Image 1 (cartoon, rainbow, N blue to C red):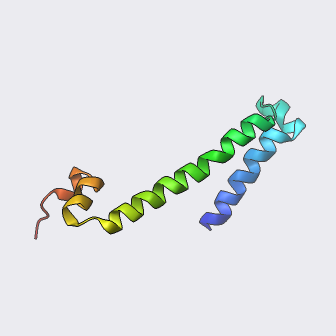
Image 2 (image 1 turned 90 degrees about the vertical axis):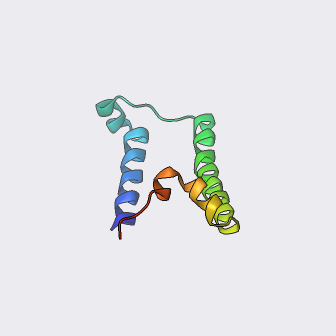
Length: 79
């Protein structure tokens, strides 16, 4: 269901931006090729950064992993 929701959101946003009738209703304008090219780079950058982080976490020992994850993960847990 989550993937269906994401697909609907992407299609709906695309319709609002590119269909002239919906452009008038929502006050949007179609994106040009430069804007689309710029936006297309962001998913690749985010995916690459996440993959780098995951690889780094796999290579690190326990102490480094706790530091990367943040101080909240280092708090003592009640038994």
